Length: 224
Image (tube, rainbow, N blue to C red):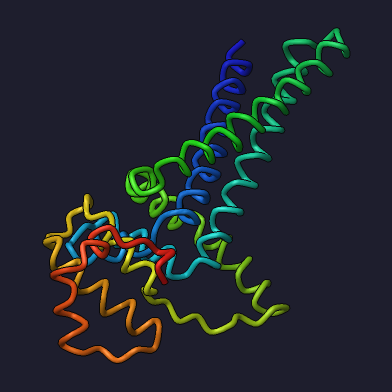
C-alpha cells in the first residue's frame, strides 16, 4: 500500500514537472524581448533571469529538454509500476491505464501548459523565472554535457543579442509594464525609428511635424 502511494506521488510530481518545463519553454520563446529588456533595466530581478535565459536560448532549450525528458521518463516508469501493482491480474486494465496515462501527460504535461503560457507570456514567464533558475542549477551538469556533445557535432554560431526596431516600437505602443513616456515622447521616438528604418534623413522639420500628425499616436508596425 505504501509503495503504491509513493508511486502515485511520483506520477503526480513527474506530471507537474513535465508541465512546468513545457510551459517555461513556450513562455521563453513567445515573450517579447523588448519588454524583458525594459523591465530588466528597471531593476526587475525576475526579468534579469529571463533576459539571461533568452540571451542564450540554446543552453536554455537544452536545459528544458533535459528536464522534460527526465520528468516524462519518471512519469512513464512510475505509472507503469503503479499499474502493475494495482492491476496485477488484468492485462486489459493495464493497457487501458497506459492509454489514459499517455493522454494525460500529452494534455496536462504538454498542450495545456503551452497554451496557458502563450496566452500571457510576460506574466507567466516572470512567475516561472525563479523556478527555472533553480531547475537550471540542478540540471547544469546534465545540460552542460548535452551542450558539449551538441557543440562537438554542430559548432555554435555567434549570437549577437539586441533589441530590434520592432521591439522598441512594441514598447512604445504598449507601455503598461512600467515605461514613463508621454504620448508626444513616444511619437517623436517612433518617428525617428521609422525614418531610420526607411533610410531617410532625420531633420528638425520631420520631427516637428509630429505635433500635427495624429496618426503617429497610434503607430502600427505595418507602417514600416
